[in-house]
Length: 226
Image (cartoon, rainbow, N blue to C red; front, top):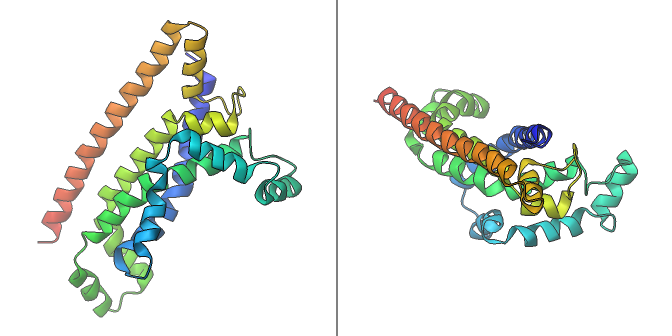
């Protein structure tokens, strides 16, 4: 078991979720409540990482954040550090790749809030922030929880994009999925099997927990609204 790779994967998943979920709340709420020209194109763009092969996504990210790109050059001039083959580059890539896993469940959760609930809250003189914090957020928790678990689990097992953008640098970009690949390449099937089993058990447990909590929260909110 490569514990260094496991810790790096957990760290990457945690940082990605912390940065992505607030963004997904903003985007998901805006898409749920507003109609505008080109909305279908925006939603399609958000979903692109789901249908493109990871190697294709990784290639475009490598080109877009490499030393020849304006972003890569600007970051290197500012920090003295490259984005590619570095943990920070993996964080940016993970955020972009997991946008659909975060936005879609949250958007669907906001769409289930009845319009008259928001109208009644507004008539009571609630500010937009108070409405969001005290009324909307408690009602969309199942969607937020689903987004959080999906993103965390997906980042934990991401392989193609990590390999394309980060390579295989121990302690920096070598995640658990890369460690499994290395073990197979070295014919260490016991090590690969152990790490794969850990990811499998985590995925099953996370999805079961999400389903259970979503049902409980959904039932609780349903009783509270009556």
